[in-house]
Image 1 (cartoon, helix red, strand yellow):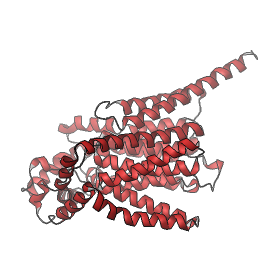
Image 2 (tube, rainbow, N blue to C red; image 1 turned 60 degrees about the horizontal axis):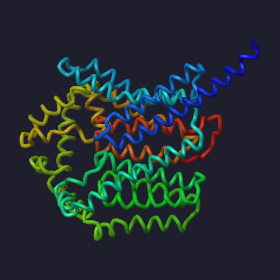
Image 3 (cartoon, rainbow, N blue to C red; image 1 turned 90 degrees about the vertical axis):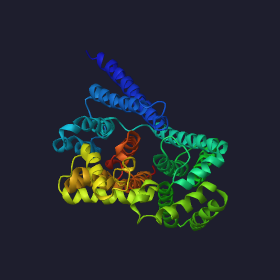
Length: 430
């Protein structure tokens, strides 16, 4: 009997290593899947499934939760799924199929916290490899869009005068935010991790290219996220008393828009298009042509719904029907194919779940940042900056990729965060 214990331990240890590897493979598939939506739409879902399987397998093998200390933060994330689930109580029968589609869409907010809350922290090598993979595939996707632009320069430059942009994978809004997050990730890895000289060279080249591409793509939300992150990084440099680097960064941030205006037609055309767009806001019929005008009137239609349903909202699955009715009543000049959901995630939640649901949403999404305040992670803060910018201008959680990005990165960054007993005053990155 005594001889069986070492053998059991060996099998258990071997099984744990296999499950850890499976979780890393799953994370890699999720990251790659973000950039293969048109051709491999299920790749991210397969990755989430593998991570979930690894987590459940680890619990079955060891009967323990390796990240028990982090469960309050993970439980808060799962509240976002709970909102969708509870909205079925406030859904019209005719939209019940749409409700269940929403439940499936929001599953990452419960599966990933559950799995990462069970699995042990990955090794430093695994963590850095996944972060480097994210930077790499973002740069490769940006390179693909850049090459396409070079072969269709005149056509794409013209698109920018009509509130349209160059093709990207995923869509340009989500992609611009991924680029901002990849730049922050690259800087964190460059500063904090031990890399070989060749690896550092490639990493710096990737960061520099992504910064250039952010201005070439010229998506307003992506540029705003980039500047907020850069200002935050500049504050860190000042706190470290690295004044030369801080002033160099400030000079770069001031000069880059000017240089982009004269050197990048996409940036210049987007600038003039934005000016023209903003000048048409008072004309509701221009929502049929201009994106900013369309957003403003989506806010007005949404707010009319909120005033009639302030406490519980109308239910997530009923938002499209309610918005269509308000557009028809308030803005008959806007054509049906230009009816939009609220272009703001907070307003979307207010319409869907009411003021009660919005409070739950804010608690669920932002509590992990408060929970992690003692182990301050610059990359976790960068994530919150980027996603908050997206929530302000985009109903991000209403699409597959828009759900996977916040659900995966929030759960993943909490996963790689040290448990609090490992150091109460540690400042880490990522």
